Image (cartoon, rainbow, N blue to C red):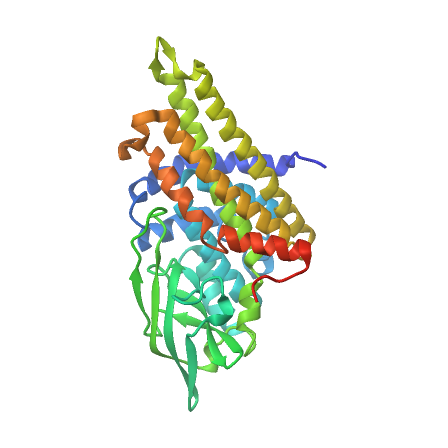
Length: 381
């Protein structure tokens, strides 16, 4: 087992961290509790894309950088320490680009892929519905055939990047047990969006998309007819690792803040860093963070080797997103009363962390995935 990153990865990360502090941190600072607007998002995606964040999974022959999962993970984790919201925005945009790269026709790829990779266009994926979250096959949004076109009806909910998206990759029911994927262009298709006011990660757009008779044709279908559900389920291992990377970034930021505060805050005649119970809290935070990091990068390294690794990805996601809540709660405790003040920012880590046990399978869903993989019995149905 080799726990060292390559020299190339280390140098890339050092360069990336310098750029984050110099060019990204000042630009994301105004958006900590309001979602990053489209102009700022495009500017930021253009910066991150140059370093492979938002472009790394797309092969070089299609305009991407073609990074391995571990290297991509290092970059996303570092970004999430500075801005988990921008990390989320870039990840969802990259996921949409990857779907178009894998499934798109030559015409679709030529029209949309360069813009997505350059940050000129913003994409999202719309699968979840009010009555179909983790139970994806229960989705009710549908496509009704009307001559040479389809009319889409239904509602998609909890959609990241919804208010910003120029392109929406959505899955709808096209038969009793058949689902197809369509590519919606905001300029071409008349869908409407409502932003959701939420607990944390408020710099990252989350909304509802309403399909009130949106008209599409076969030219707007992405991938084979009837394969939409199967294709949409393929990215869950990667997505679970990504949410875990965001958790790692938040926990690292919380630990850094707690250590800095403990060194400067004095009580009973000395810095609180010298008090035993403060050291105990920081030790617990560091232990949970390191354990989480090992699980996440194990899962990423396995994805690089190929094959299916549902169990390892689910273990990483469930452990890391639960651990980050404890870490950020302890960070507030180190701060004491100052920890609950919005002006100090540490409470934002806690709110952001609490968001992460929900997407890409709740903690409970992921534990059922782990149980299914280990026991060979499906508890879902």
